[in-house]
Length: 332
Ligand SMILES: CC(C)(COP(=O)(O)OP(=O)(O)OC[C@H]1O[C@@H](n2cnc3c(N)ncnc32)[C@H](O)[C@@H]1OP(=O)(O)O)[C@@H](O)C(=O)NCCC(=O)NCCS
Image 1 (cartoon, rainbow, N blue to C red):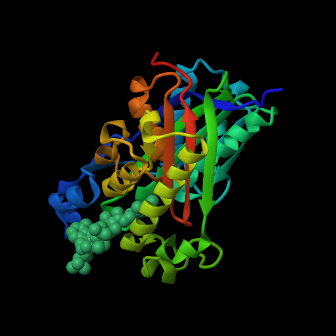
Image 2 (image 1 turned 45 degrees about the vertical axis):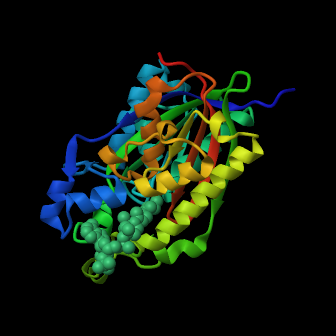
């Protein structure tokens, strides 16, 4: 019997209204629009404002929109996975909150922590529920409120990140469509270069940790940059080779949006021209787990059934990977 595969049957994104521009950042830290644009490609990012507004707020919006556009009854959703490093709280899982608010009463739900590669990890895991034959409708959300862990006094990180969410629906695939192959990796020795020191069990929150500004994302940008370029490109090249794909066979590269220069280097290594690279970093910055579904959402109308997509990401952990997807539907 042919092995069941999973396919994406819909995608939806959500970004908050508030736009934090480079000009506004110029008033907050010693930086300028020219430096940010030339070093990162970012012009503005969205920020979720308001009291008691957590990551789930954005995940719920994306998930609700997705159910509506795919005519899916929330009671038919069997699994909800949310990739995030900015959960509403350590527990319960943000996925639990999303599942409750969208009425996915017959699902079980949990979070995945793999930073900027979180969506790829969640997509692969979600696909495997379908592939095993045990589940037929899986909701995969990538959502992060990075503004809640960004130090707006640190010019090397605050220029990079924004808030957003994206969601996809996974269902059993037809023919050779859907999630074809995945290469996912992690290397915990990357911890010193990208992490948040306090707030976990090693350094619980205290006056001291707050005063030392340890509840913010810490990054050694140039080290992360080098690892990101090498590993994202290696994983993408490997998944292409394993599936006999050349640059010309790839319709779209869907890269994690961390820095335009990392994206350009990855595309170059894969032999994929800039016209085939999804890019929205200039408008949203790095939304961590949300970048890839937000790209798919932005470009959905240009995607055709049978298009070969390579999704590639790199993030804190370190985590990285690439997934080969044969897009399953024409624009609706
Ligand atoms: C953070 C990042 C944009 C910095 O760019 P870079 O070209 O590596 O710049 P460097 O860190 O070498 O810094 C160069 C100079 O610019 C300065 N600089 C840093 N941030 C600045 C800012 N916002 N505005 C102006 N100058 C800035 C630095 O202080 C440094 O000055 P110095 O030479 O006098 O010390 C880049 O390293 C990066 O994108 N890293 C990867 C980020 C990433 O992918 N993170 C998420 C993982 S998914």
